[in-house]
Image (cartoon, rainbow, N blue to C red):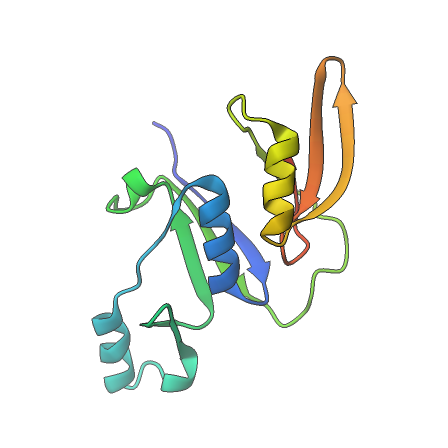
Length: 146
């Protein structure tokens, strides 16, 4: 039996970062159920202050998730990245990071495209014949592209 995994990413703006990573990985932002959110507010389990509007839809303000598009209807999802709010900014190096395999795509072109969308180039490294660019997403989380 294999297990499912969710990776949680602490951030300041979960909806913006979920959109950014969904585009980067060619994944999809997981839809949130507006009627469920409204029902939780009506029943007193949540408040309007815990919601926001993102792309014209009512969503929980504290989190957003992404999944591969073919897994959007899976329950539970096999692979999911959850972006959740925390009050503090990132201050030190990540202890875990993503390695984004470009499936043969040009890493220099990918670097330029990511920088145009708000990523920061940090450095280039290599090991034997393999090389990669280390980048940071718009909130400073490190990742590599190769």
